[in-house]
Image (cartoon, rainbow, N blue to C red):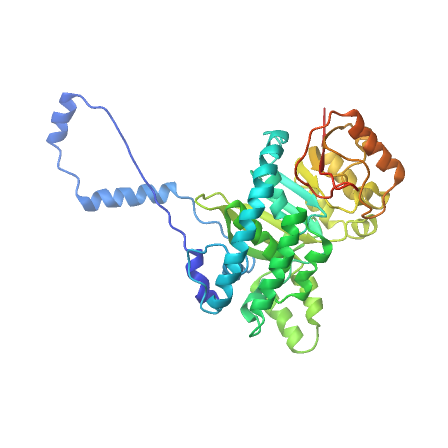
Length: 422
């Protein structure tokens, strides 16, 4: 596969140099007595200057599956459509898929992105940290970039694993067309609902393509980014990251071939957590999204403290959550809730963020936008908290919200809650 998609990763660097200096007549005359600089020496000087000014390329630990990610970007997410479909895939399947997906994306931009992003941009202070933590946010780079377009690092957490991007190398004959059709259906739901549903995310475990990664790559297409690398990792005891090297993954594959391990065991151990680096098309700055498969309830957070250590090492963050089944309302999720409350000064959510009682206790104030009468019955909805949130919307000035941000309320109204330090 790597030889088929190498062209997708080409990088062109144009370096321009200029040096303007005013001179007097005497200096010009003096210069006329100096031997002219030969083109060879001028080129050598230019080469030396460029080498000195250009930082060395970053060496990333772990096996990098950038070619597979770029192939998936082209055939499933329909990025880089000015390049040919890699020869390993049928253009007669990919081209119609991309034509239909382009229509869906254009409609989504018109009906949601172009309306929601300008509104949200007025809410988010320019000074918030560009490191973002998004619990219960699997598959929603789309919403994260709409909310924090300047983010440099994002961590999403959900129960779903990232899955093995190498699946793109071994799509069974005849399976690509129906798989791409399935993704169009699921992406259509994502565009319509403006959040990732658990049943949609589960496509990654059943598909011949890795769902979490496909969703993130589609988000890059929508927002004008492209992938540059993809690696898998696990957490060390201190919360730092260990990126899996190729020999580790090869050994795991061999354990499956020999019957010592089941493929599901290997997927959970090696392909749960991924780091996808990406950049704005035309820019050099690299950004990072890390997806972590983890159960955020207190029992799992206490049993394995590595994720919390990873989070705490980030210092101050920006936070967001939506369509989170009201889990932050529950004391069963008190650890992740407390982490968010003590490491951010600004958070955006739908009704599934902090309850008014908890926000006030932790020193926050809350601003509401849109209309909220009662929550949709996702998760366990406590009547007292639901009433408190309803009262908050009643006492705050209402702003019409013509788009959905996560869940609507029970009457299908869009709403936003901003939780911030005064």
